[in-house]
Length: 301
Ligand code: FAD
Image 1 (cartoon, rainbow, N blue to C red):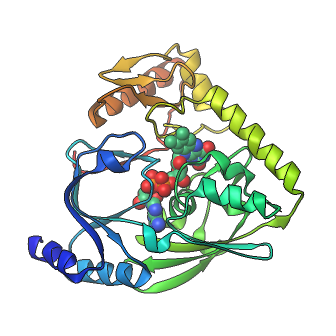
Image 2: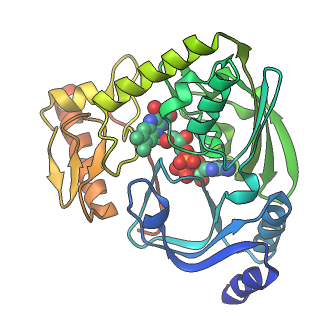
Image 3: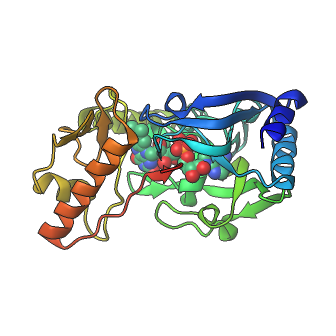
């Protein structure tokens, strides 16, 4: 594997980093090293990287902004492919928006509002990339990616480039087909509607204000830790169980939002996992509800 990683570096297909601490690439600021992290320069380089890794059976994982990931303390074996510069574009054509996978989902919402286009207001506080948002079918305020999604260009695990439409993506609550099929989204196209710029901007501002008042945005976190159970809210159950402020190491159930775990200093992934297990057990015992993680736990344990 070392030879393949050295080849990746020699090929000049992107920025290649060895033993890169993933804590530097996640919003939780938690995570051990990737054996190798590559940020390809563009689509061609991304395809060449995947083909090379597949030819040599080197395992690979994709990473956007790391805002929904808990990376283990031992880190990730093999290669982590992070979407970066070459995939950081946006293009408007009437009510259609095409964005590269690395483009910021928040910036996309702001750009759409400036263009007087409505449909992306829900994205104004979701701090990941377009690729991560499509993978997760990210959503808020009663909407999600599936409501505006038109198509995505995806590099399949074989290196083949395909275009998926809405049906192909099999979107459901925080889920897409890519949870079952390995592939990297390189760009996505969304269909918006013409709207009133001032009104769109005021909706964005109201959502922002609500988040600032209800979420611990000044601390390292990964948004909601658990999915909402059918007909209820994970935050409500955790708060009612009296778990706000519960700590393991430097990981704490946020006193502001019970479904957020914040890293108050040098929290380890193991601290977060222990805290998650305690929350799950307490909520199960008190309410008979099984909480399911929304954050993705990855890496060697
Ligand atoms: P990452 O965390 O890097 O990756 C998530 C998954 O997507 C991984 O499996 C990764 O392999 C995969 N992935 C990433 N990029 C690609 C790609 N190009 N192709 C294929 N797979 C890819 N989420 C919501 O849904 N609603 C919210 O309201 C919300 N609020 C949040 C608030 C805060 C403060 C924070 C920190 C997070 C919040 N999140 C929310 C969670 C998170 O921002 C979203 O899930 C986001 O869409 C993840 O994007 P990312 O680029 O960070 O993905």
